[in-house]
Length: 146
Image (cartoon, rainbow, N blue to C red; front, side, top):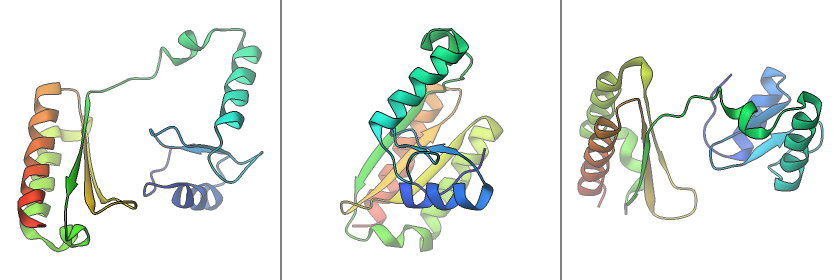
């Protein structure tokens, strides 16, 4: 598995560099390079049906081994959404959150590509901690970027 920035363009670039045939993101965008270079719901559905048929198992069985962790997302309205990377307080809050989550969690902060907002996502095994950290980063970003 490789991680790329969010968006079909970056996923496709990562796939081409790594030689991967399948790429996607949690939003549901899935790229099956054998058939297309962008996310396509019909292609994805047909591929899932193909895997189920070949395995002879229902989707619930096939997906049972995928670990799901609590996740919180925030969209922070921000007049200066592109300044978050240069803000020391926001960077410190992100680093602190990553430290508190440890290797079992992750923090993703990025500017929205469609609106004047900063996207904050926090994921980890402890739901209360995930909520606390997402709220803290989002609150700080809202104060500092407006």
